[in-house]
Each structure stands twice: as C-alpha cells, then as structure tokens.
Image 1 (tube, rainbow, N blue to C red):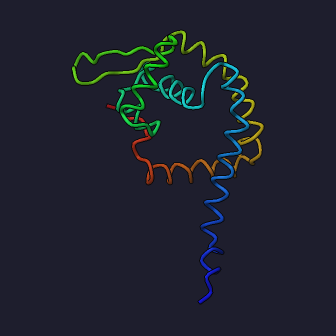
Image 2 (cartoon, rainbow, N blue to C red):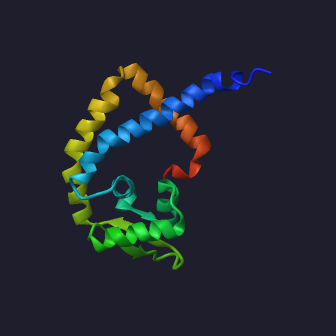
Image 3 (cartoon, helix red, strand yellow):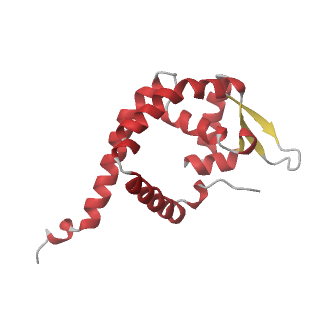
Length: 157
C-alpha cells in the first residue's frame, strides 16, 4: 500500500496555504497594533465593539466572536477596562446580561492604530489581489465562516 498518496491530497495543500498565509499576515500586521500598546486580541475585541451597534456587545457575544471562553473574555475585558478602553454596562432589560462597551479612550486608541494597520492590510493582503480576486475571497471566507464559526456573526437582537 502506498502511504504517500494521502499526503499528496490537494486539500492538505489548501489548508497549509491558509495556515501559512495567516501566520505571515499576523507577523506583518503585528507591529501596527503593538505600536499602540495592543495585542492582536485586544485590537480584534476593540474593533468588534467599534463596529457594533452602540459600540457595545454582550459579553457572551464578544466571547463567541473572539473565540474565547467566558472566563477568557472576562480576563480580556478586565484588562481593557483597567486600561480605560472599555467599560462594562448592565442590561436594563436583562439583569443576567452584561455588555462590554467601547469608551472614548478606546475609540481614540483604535484611531491611533488604524492608519498603520490599514496600510499594512493594503500592503500585505488586500492590495496583492485584483478586485475580482478580493471579492471572490471575501465571498468564500463568508461561506466558510458561516459554516465553521456561525457565532462570529453579529447578532441583531
């Protein structure tokens, strides 16, 4: 039996390319958020808050969108709150729900990161693709995300 055949499967190549692209992009984008004293996880959470209605999310939704456990998102929000970048808010309609909300200081910090971050995204990711390639990639990523990580989409309720 030929044991090398399964290792020549093009699906393995596709996954390997995805992992390598992700690792390479993180390495290229890291200096942009580090310059503002943030980790990639910090920036991800702050951007999710900034792009959400009212610039806030339920803690459980933030956990799902950042792929953190409830204790992990609690630690993240604690750290960001200590830095003055987010605050916790109680839900008036549901005492069991707590929200993480972006503060003006958090919005200012994101504003500091954006020029360098967007320039790096353009240089190392979106600018390498034609508009057609980028449209196809975004469409494909949405299909995969919706199937593999449906909790990452923002809730509208």
